[in-house]
Structures are given as structure tokens and as C-alpha cells.
Amino acid sequence: MSIEIDILNGDASWQIAEPLLQAVWAPQLVAGKSWAHVKWANADLRVLLETPEDGLVCHVGIYFRTISWNGQKVHVGGIGGVSTREDRRGRGYATIAIDAAVHTMRANEAVRFGLLFCEPHNFAFYEARKWQRFKGEVYCEQPEGRIRFDYMAPYVFDIVRAPTLGTIDLCGLPW
Image (cartoon, rainbow, N blue to C red; front, side):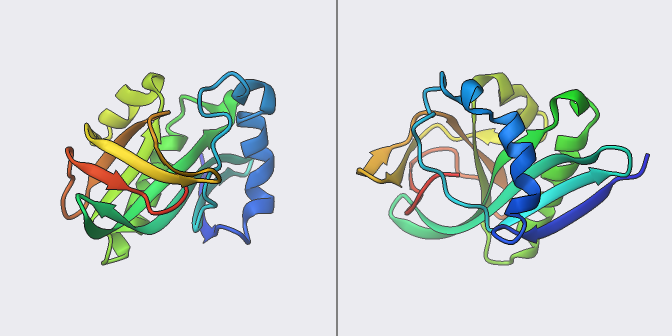
């Protein structure tokens, strides 16, 4: 099995990623979610996994941001938009793409920890990959102003540290 991993500029690679993201997060699937109305940030970078047989099979967005944790500015790397083609799940593609995203975040020496948001059905998946539940409060920006973001559970990844308590302000849109 041959896999090609590309890490591309987020905006420039949108046209490549969009069909996969639209298939995985089709409007009829998103409509019933508590977070369906949330305005999301655009990825700074994208991890794209392709196979010669299937083309694009997996996507992970990478986000870099200076946030506030307990009132202190901290540079973090985030992942979001983790998407694998439905007919190609269970083959380890998401793990490979997430590992590539974490490697990319580690290469940015300013990043102190990784941050993602997920639904309960994905908790065990991320915990098995050494992500830890953040048990504090998270705030973000939305068109209507600053809100508490509690639509999905926050998870952190230890790069320099992995805070699991306190208050995080994303200082922008969630990812």
C-alpha cells in the first residue's frame, strides 16, 4: 500500500479538500448537531492523505493561534476537520494524518500544546493517541460575540505541556 502525505497551505488547498469535507460533513448530517450553527476558523495548513487507488482519503486541518490560558498568552497548534472517506475508515489513515499534524505542530517551536475539539464517540480514539481531556472552560468568538464553547469536548496534547484545568480563550473562532 502506498500513501502520499501532503501538508499544504490551508487556503490554497481548499479546492482539493472541499469535496472530501463536503462528503463527510454533508449538510443533512450536520443539521442535527448541536454545533451546526457554529462559525469555524479556516485551517492554516492541511494534511492530505492520498492513495494511488483512491485519491484523497483523509484530511486534517492544522491551526496555529496565540490563545489565552488562565490569562496568559500561549501559542498552540490545533487540529480540526478530521475527515476520512466513509468507505476507507478503519485503515489507520486518520492516525497517520493526525501524527503528521502533530509532527508539524512540534516543528513550530513556539507551540506549547495541541488542542482539538471532539464529540463523545471520538473520545476513546483521541485518548488512545495520548490526547488528554481539558476539564476547564473554553471561550471563543462567534459572529454574535464571545461565547462559552461547550458544543464539543476540548482535548490537549503535550508538546511542552498539556494543561488540563483552567480557562482557555481561543481569541478567535474555534476549529
